[in-house]
Structure formats: structure tokens, C-alpha cells
Amino acid sequence: MNHDIPALRALAVSLATSAGDLIRERRPDRATVADTKTSATDPVTEMDRSIEEYLVAEILRARPDDAVLGEEGNDVAGTSGLTWVIDPIDGTVNYLYGIASFAVSVAVVVGPPHPEWWTVLAGCVHDVVTGRTWSAGCGQGAGANGVPLTPVAPAPLSSCLTGTGFGYDSARRARQAQVLTKVLPRVRDIRRLGSAAVDLCLLAEGTLDLYYERGLNPWDMAAGSLIAAENGAEVVGLRGTKASGEMTVAGRGPAVRELLNILEAADADRD
Ligand code: IPD
Ligand code: CA
Image (cartoon, rainbow, N blue to C red; front, top):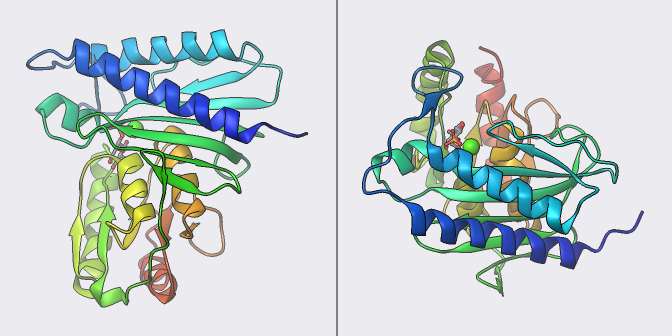
């Protein structure tokens, strides 16, 4: 089936940026935790909830036959085979603490809405603090603020500024810390910026050279993985698998294989 990818991309951009406007408008001086999810340190704020509700309503208004999968659970079934995979605030801890680097992530996928089976058709990540807006359409390249991204040259592993992130579960974090001891001595440095969606966009434009993380949810990675891939990055999992919650690695050139070797030797895809 043919999909109008430019139109889907334009809708993703309009949804993510209008949600960003609402967050900027409604943001209290100090956000508070409304609830917790997978662990006591996995917060939900009223803003996460209200922005997801806003996005679901706007998606259904524009595309009544599509399904929606959202971080806060306002899922909707559809009949078209397309699913909007949305994260109202990726980087909720940053939002809570008033630290820059949190974003709205909106993507539309065809196929089961899981990274192992989906094809991401279009996506947008809108950084709420800087206003920077990355987007991509499948097979149509990636851009930021409406300007196509330029090609990025690969860097040797030892020069790679490497983004990563950690889960909310304490046992998972202990493993991630062990894995980090194998990666950190081999790369330029590590950045844990706090939004996987933004990390993938920074990797796309070459601000980060490499990225890896275990434990991403579909909404953390849907838009960012397309944006990175559409600007020439490899986005993969370990041991020949597709990028997924098991492990997502993104980068360019031989450094990707070298990082995969380190992560595979460390069993970084196992808790
Ligand atoms: C989290 C962020 C973080 C990543 C976590 C995600 P949230 O999403 O993307 O950078 O390390 O794995 O869960 O909870 O802020 O929406
Ligand atoms: Ca998220």
C-alpha cells in the first residue's frame, strides 16, 4: 500500500511542535510527580498525561482510522494498519528538575508497533527547550527546522562522544554500570543527557558520534531511529538483530562494529 509520507511527516511535525507550544505555555515553575510507573524513580507528571491526551485527540481528528500507542497508556485501536507511536515528554526527569533536554516524540509506523516488526514511515522529535525540531520521512531524508541534515563523517571509536542512558530498575542499572566500565575506556567520553529521542537526533546530525542503550520503549526510539537512519546512521541491535528494547546501537563507520563487539562480549543485552 502506498503511503503519503510527506503528508505523514508534516502531520508529525505539526503534532510535535503544537504539543511543545502547549508544554511551554502550561509549564508550572516547578513540576511535581503525579504518579510513578515501573519503579519509584520512573515519574509521570500531569503534563505527560495532558499532552498525551491532546496528541491522541489531534491524531484521531486528522486520521480517525489509525491506531495510537502512547507512553502514558492512552492506546487506541485502528483499522488502517498505521500506528502513531508517541511520547508526550521524553526526558520526564529533566522536565521535572528543570533541566534542558526533553522532547515530544511523534512517529507513525506500519506493521505491528514494535521495533522488531515495524517500518517507521515518518517521525518528528521537538526539543521543548531549544525549539529544535528534527523530522524524517522513510526514504526521504532527515532535517532539522526544515533544513536537510548534512552528511556526517564517521569518527574512530577512541574519538567517539558516546550517548547512552540507564533504565529505571535498580538491577538493570547495576548491569548497565558494569557494561559502562567496558565502554568508557574505549571512547572519547560518555554523555547521559536524559532523552533517548534527543540522543538519537543528536547522533543523526553528528553532535554525538555514537549511541547505545538497553531498555528503550517503542515510543522512545520510533521517531529518533528513523531520523538517525535517514541521515546515514546505522541503527542496529546486538548479534545481528534489529534495534529494539533489548539493545539499540547507532553510529557510523567501523566504530559501530567495534562498539557492538564490546557490548556483545559484555552480554550487554542481558540483565
Ligand atoms: C526515558 C529517557 C531516557 C532513557 C530512558 C527512557 P522518559 O524516557 O528517554 O533518556 O534513558 O530509557 O525511559 O521516561 O523520560 O519518557
Ligand atoms: Ca520516553
